Length: 188
Image 1 (cartoon, rainbow, N blue to C red):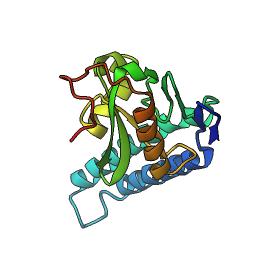
Image 2: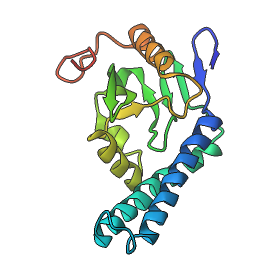
Image 3: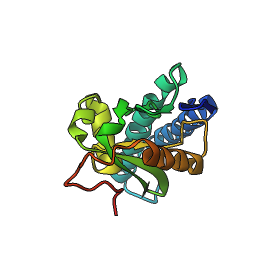
Image 4: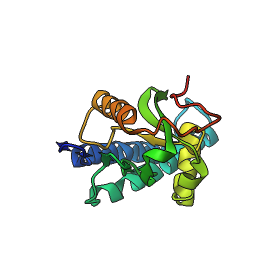
């Protein structure tokens, strides 16, 4: 993590990205194995085994493929500045977010994975920046098209990420601008 007086830059962690990719590959291999023994195993019906195998191959295959471009991405994973946040932490990244568009930050847990949600006044504006596959992944992952940041591919721990985002929101947000029905606080 690089910090100067006003700008905080967090790089992508190539080690974490390789780990996520290898774990995805392991699940794909497990899916292929389940498919190969579907007719000979006796625990489940062959159809059920093939369904499980296909879902495993499809889900983890797509997830693994979506992480690979980040291995070659030279841009930082996250930049926090007085003007806003540059978010490039995952395959569904939206890029630049002005503080004027942010009305809160919140911690959420999705399937025992902690993430930071950036509450923006116009989520559709940021959803448009994603491709169709990223939009589908976001809907499956969070149930919404909200901007979210995870530390899984960043060169920092989640606790650091949370403190940096919360402190920066308090420091740089525009208290005079009413968003989301006048609310200026994180989700309650």
